[in-house]
Image 1 (cartoon, rainbow, N blue to C red):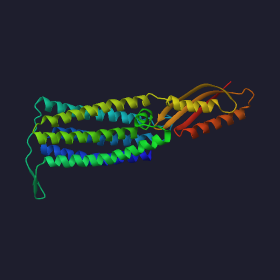
Image 2: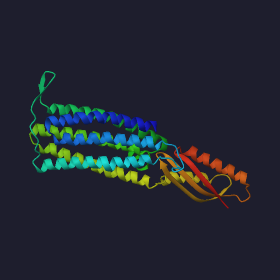
Image 3: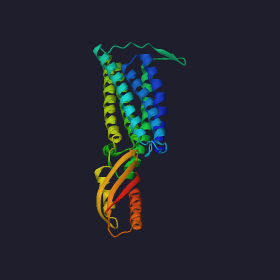
Image 4: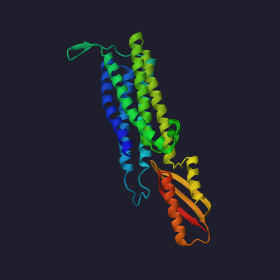
Length: 314
């Protein structure tokens, strides 16, 4: 949890500062790509606030009305990030870029500005802001990658694609994907603005804005899909669940594993239930000991297992 919080805080401070700088660049040059990037960074900043709320709310203790805790709050707030923020920012960016393209990519010619006694072309403000954004986003991406790498090492995942499909830590997943898209968006905006400046054709700038918006909307759909699977109650991946099944089925005095189920009830928080048949001549005290041994073995095998309920079958 501390790792996820540090990842989100790093992105929050970086994106807040970058949003202000990008908007300043847009005011000076009227660049559609800079406006798209402003939408992008504002949404990123709001994203981090939602994710922090999810982390805080999800850490609350279990109570009568929420007997398994509030862990799924992270899934809900991550879903809000994708639908309300990335979807809106993506749509606005794409719409603005499309309007600029259909109207000939019109944006005003920027006049020279004077700062600290120096007069310069304000397009250099855009270059400086976007290069700074790339540096900040690279740092935030590195922090998020450290977080997902820890999980990959812990659970034996070999690729980022596998981690994306299997992780229940949607906070780190959201930050990683968001920072990747942010880095790509800043690069596209920088390239589009540079081409427009070099060729005098504003269509490159407008096309960059449209492309950034399409990327954001695509990410919104992908992230919403990942949160949907967890909100609906996804089980542990089959190969990992089979390992837990084998532990139970092979335990001393177990004759049959009648039923076995797993479900995530929070980020890296797994609930396991099993109906188990024991040797018929065991007394109640021995059965209770075996159940305790199995519960501890499951928790020791997979650190995500937080609660285990075993029902002895006759």
